[in-house]
Structures are given as structure tokens and as C-alpha cells.
Image (tube, rainbow, N blue to C red; front, side, top):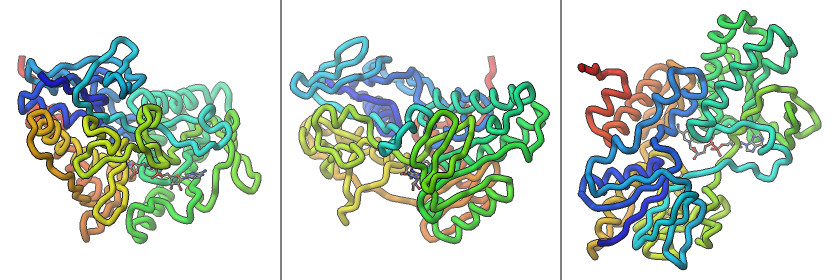
Length: 394
Ligand code: NAD
């Protein structure tokens, strides 16, 4: 029997696993945590909305067949010569490998940034941001240092803006809870480029900027973070911003496991794959999601988004099964539907096809993408459970 190993239970890896599970194709899925999480909603988990574990799904709940095996382990090496995945707790030989290890923060070599900033990368870091911010409010009355209530987010891409939107809605609640005046709190986003949110159309960027500033956030564009020391963000031009909370959302790169294993990678560490999502260096290794460097027909690399990773996951399940049985593989075709960004709990902006959405409609459209994804992942029961529509009868 062929030994199929999947590393990583992000969008690409998890959908490969659930696809193979449905087909009854045996595999071993290895993941650091016992759960899969909804990466596109991490800003909600960081920004005080509900229980962060609501954004997770136990992996074992998603795998139904006895032939599907899940191992909780952290992979530290892909040993290509021995065709073995090396984890902290064991080794896993493979005939076919799917790598969906996702991303790590890109610090661009900025001094002090990695040491002195928080990142929004997974459930643990979302909880860390949330607890850190709340701790600053909780201790402010005993130690009313203004920098305690200053929050700086570096980078105005989708991650930075969605997190900013979430925090700007959470701050009034924290002010009430801890007896702090709203005008004592500063929420500042710093972006090196001339505009925020380059992924949406210019008029929607203006809507986003207006929405966020009206709620009390400050946006500074054309401003580059050049260094971070403890509690201080250093800007080009020499200005210093003192802030107890510094969050870096300035970019991502693929997990280093692939470059360390000697795969051909791009400048962001993503492994180059062929039309079927196989590594160009090894036909028995498939790569999906943010770790894959896939070029469309025009030669343009696909962006590292959940939308692409989800579509890759479906294709990977089919292609791995075909590879195991010696059938022809299917070329991957991405269908990019557009981009949606939430701007807090009730409104958002986004371009879907030719439509430019804003306000509650964009927020609802984003909610619909969550429902669609949950449906793909776990059908009616999971969708109802995670959207709060399931009543448990004992
Ligand atoms: P990003 O690379 O898209 O944005 C980072 C931003 O930080 C850029 O605008 C960049 O100019 C800025 N920046 C970089 N260095 C800086 C510096 N020194 N000082 C100030 N600003 C600096 O990163 P992201 O937002 O984390 O997104 C990563 C990927 O994930 C993207 O492909 C994005 O589309 C995707 N994503 C999608 C969604 C969604 O669809 N809702 C949400 C989050 C992320």
C-alpha cells in the first residue's frame, strides 16, 4: 500500500486530507496542533470576539474513515534522500508527500522587529495579542503611562487592516470595562507605501480609510518602520513612537522547511511547483497553499491566500489519489473570485468580479465565504455548529 503523508493542516493540507478521506484513500496527516483553524478570521480571535477556540475545528472530527490517520507532531525536517518526514516525536517514511506548511512572518531584516513585536500567525499568537492588549488596559490605572494605551500595527495589507478594524471596535468595550477614556487610547497603523489595502480598488481604499479613521484609528502611509527596540517603533526620518503594543503585519514568507530541504524556491521561500502542484524537483512531492510557488498561464505567481489554498487542496486530493493509482493528473486552475476585507464587526469592503462592495453587504459576503468554506470542510453539521445554528440535544 502506498504511503501518503500530508504535512500541515492549514487550508491546503486539511482539504487534501478530507478529500482523500472521502475517497477512502489511506494517508497520514501530521500537524503541530490537534485542530485546524480559520486563518482568515484570526483578527476576530485577536480582537476580543468570542472564544478564540471557536475559530478551530478538531482534526479528528473531520476525518471519518479508519484508513485516515492523524498524528500530532511538529515536523522539523523533510529528508528527501531518505523519503522521510522527521518530526519532534517520530519519523514518517513516505511514497507520496503533500507539503502544506504555510507561512512565517517576513521581517525584511529590520533590526529588533522579530524580538520586539507581536504577530498574528495562528491561534496562539491571536490569544497572545488579545491578552497583551487587555493586560495594558488592566494595569493602566495603576501605571498611567500613555504608551501603555498606544497600539501600533506595522503594515496596511489585508492582515493589518482587518486587525485594525477589529481592534477599533473592541477598544470602546475595553475602555468601559477598565474605566479608561477613549481619547487616552491611540491605535496607529503605519504603512510604507502611498496607500492602504492595495488588493482592493482605489475607491474602496478611500472607503476603508474613512471608515477606520471615523472610528478613531490613525493611518500613516508613506512611512517606513526601520527599527524596533523594546516599546519603541523607529520610523524613517528619525521619529520614534513609544507603544506598549507593537504588532507586525508587514509581510509573509513560506515556512523554511522547504528551502532547508533544498527545493527550488522564490524570494519568499515558496517551492516551485508544476501544473499539477508537484515540486519541480521531485515528482513524489506535492506542495500546496502559501508554501507553493505556482505561476498562472501569464507567468504570474498566485498570491498566498486562503482562496488559492482551498482550491489547491481540492486539486491535491484528486492528484494524489491519481498518482497513487497511476492515473493521469489534473492541471491546477485557480479561479480568483476577488478580495473581501472586514473593517470591524459589521462592515467591510471588497471587490468580487466587477462588483465593488462596501459596508454591511461586504461584511455579509465575507460571512458567506466562511459558511461556504465550513460546508466544504465538514458539511451541514460543522457549518451549523460553527455559525451558532446547531442546537445540541442530549
Ligand atoms: P502583505 O504583504 O499583503 O502586506 C504587508 C504590508 O506591509 C504592505 O502593504 C507593505 O507595504 C507593508 N510594509 C512592509 N514593510 C514595511 C515597513 N518596513 N514599514 C511599514 N510598512 C511596511 O501582508 P499581509 O497583509 O499579511 O497578507 C499576506 C497575504 O495573505 C496576502 O497575499 C494577502 O492577500 C493574504 N491575506 C488575505 C486576507 C483576505 O483575503 N481577507 C486576509 C489576510 C491576508
